[in-house]
Length: 265
Image (tube, rainbow, N blue to C red; front, top):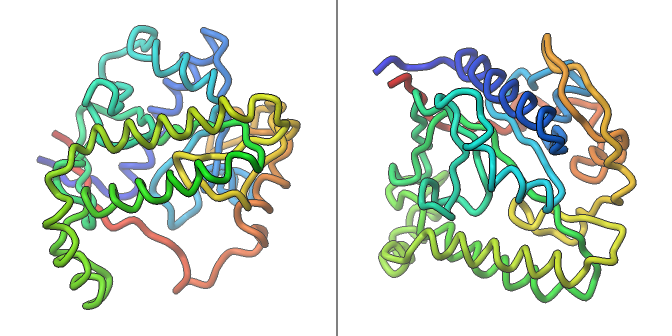
């Protein structure tokens, strides 16, 4: 297998995004750049220089449309939507992956490996009466994090010790069922708050201090590298809610990085 560089991965992610954009435009499905990808587009005109992945967000109804039909609508078999629903992914949210590649994350067991990906996070309607559901989600999410992790890795000795103690009790849990439980809770949040004018990313973060007015999500086209993709018109408020002072890049030693190895098969 050929080892991929970060620049190789970014190039592949752009190809995946081109396919997502092509499919969504052709079939009237709305997506938006989100999180680090939106920040990169606004602050850097593309990828954050030290970042190596892409994220998009979608309202839950649009997400379900893409979940149901992407693999039917795609223009090439090279790209595939993977999900716990058909047991092609252990994650609770969808990914669109390049099937000719494989990524191994250092802090996750090899059973979680997929191709180079773009993450897709659904946004749920949310109001305060759904707070209890978020607590349920966090409990199941913590259980899942121990079930999927590689117990031999950790950022320090204490983390490794906790993993060695906890992981043997949870590593035989059904990861697809845990992902299903997380998604069901997110859907219940959406269903219980259908009249709300705010949305929240339950599957990605599930934090009630990070809610976004629906009014932010008028679609605009935004430059990303030498392409254009959809972004929310209220991107400044979205980024401020998510990152605080997003205009100032973090110090070099505070820049988050993924620890992974990527290969072309």
